[in-house]
Length: 622
Image (tube, rainbow, N blue to C red; front, side, top):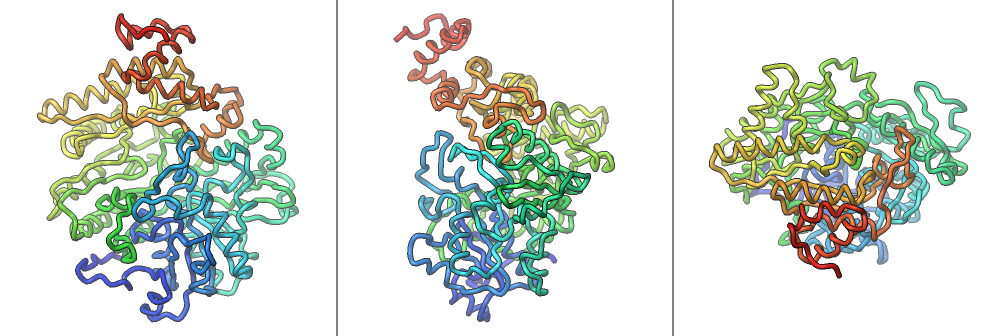
């Protein structure tokens, strides 16, 4: 299926999926097959999960309605308005985890919500995955209920919840959905719809890939084998934190298997959670089919005159691929999308780029040609047989895999082809660039020359004044826990960045991202970070305190105190005071923090760093 470019001057409400009964009637329908309840505003764009699933089902021949941000606090009319669908209700809590969306790393409530018109907060509850499901199950107890999206995906098994400060069971114990779909759900949701449409009962569908469901505990296998991994029960993990950490090693490894891995089982009370294997990464044809669906790429007309901040950020951007093989310890991308890259064809990307150029507000600048990581397009294993046996969670740590194809040539070709389109003045790269990938010497002269050309092209032609990269820390000890390369490599990339800017007569900025309080990080590491970044003349802006989110290595360390792969203890700052102390070192240049930093450096026995930060006349003691 090839997408057609909509005539933006003639769009009608029926060009979107219906959000009201009136719109449903305008489509010529008396009822629908599926109703999706979304925690986000409805933006008909491939970056918004509810739109992707809705359009996917529509392409498969089903009638789909979307109820965006239903009111869960009134008489529940939003949940009733479409009545009983023929097949099932779907719940898509949001493109961003609701708790990350609602709270800061210090657990303070945020005052805005980027996925809501006007950025206003309060349009969705905490954990929509639970709240929406309970309402729907109460109102329509016999209608199949299927949950999906990142909030369900990352909570499919026992997990540490930072906001409750507790180990929680699978979300299936809290949310009365009949089944959850984890990861990127297009293939799974169509199979489920087809089987329900054929007359199968939801309780009999237990074998669909990329789903999780709760069964009677007697269904669990007595012993593990190649096809089944039996995890430590939730009740055991509550008593024994290292067992929870050990579980995670299996979960991460199976999430990153090329063939989808084994079935995971975890007993929870009198039930057992069954997690079926992931689908292998989409083929090029499959991912093209998803991105080529007839999206308008616009918010629904119901929001006319209102701004949706998350949409404003991506309205003129294009996603080139899915998946990430970086395996960073604090990141959830591989748990949700897997580490194998699914790349769109050049033709599909150019079709979307042409659609962007036709948008009424387009001024000639594509804001991002990127992905989960900006420069993994069309990359993967040279020998796929080796990949099929691999259990490494990262293809880049502790060093790039010798079997990894790091050729940036196909990506460079995409940049140049997009820039050659009529109406495009310039395309930028707004996603984070893995400089350890583009600078890695492969020993293949042609590939290394192409990657040098990529770095030059990126720096000279695709930076919108500022290029984002993520060294994350300066301490090798901390970077080892993070699964990130040595900070020395960032220094080399900065030299290259500065050199290319000077040659081209440009005055662009390199914007590094850093994290404080990550497992393995102590105050002395943060103090050294302050010194190292001062040497490079950085006054840091893009910084954050580590926030534990479900299903990451770093979160398992934070909760259990041990590394899931070694079982060895890892220090982690967990108290608000310790976390704030680490964070203040980012702002050594702010006079408000100087006296406190000096006191802390003296307390930890690192007075030698005082002069490096503040010169020979630091502030007086207070």
